[in-house]
Image 1 (cartoon, rainbow, N blue to C red):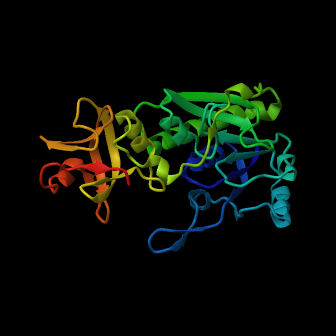
Image 2: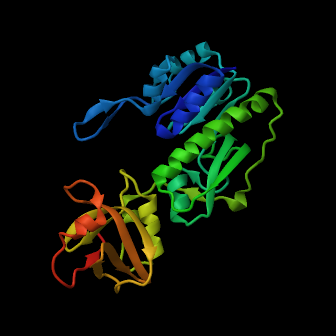
Length: 304
């Protein structure tokens, strides 16, 4: 099977690898190198790096130009597979391959259509999430799906859940493609009454707050990452909370308890027990090691 693949971040890499192992990937499209890190250097996307390692032809583009269309036609795909590409595809792309365009989406559609399905699932306290193999249409994640796989959310961090779903999606994509290609896949239209929207996470949404429930704060930590960290101010200094859990009982809301290696931030109903933190300007460390530097009674914490 001749496949054109479109993807950009780490989430897309397992799908690319699985397709390359099972089929003929004639072209990999990805977004252009981006400026990242303190050195402000141009860094290739994870998909570009892996595609080059696999010896696959790569085309970098953030939009479909006439030149891109020419390259797509030359690749002559039987199907186009997409995983977190980050670009709206026009009709001429959607109709190019005989089997159409299929997408690996990181949610159990119709729940969590949009840019941040994994983080939204965590923040909402969902018991489970998963992946869907869907058709790409004109709306945002509105197409019918033909396969889904689920996994418990539990206490998995956004990074851990992203990695798990990426692998699940890759496996499901390869399993599903033969049926997509021969027309035997059973497509299920999404129930619009069950739709929820996964808007991009704003940094302010993950600010920890002593006025909120301990579980809400714990979910913010669980959903956080480098681009949107869970932060607060302790003893007047900013700190990122990298790992934590809700517990009870604890100190009063806004108070900090440090005892026997445990660091508790008092919330509206219990406490947030810190496990790993990254104080501003310092490296990530165990919360107990960081708390050894907190001095005096009546230490308080607050929202950033």
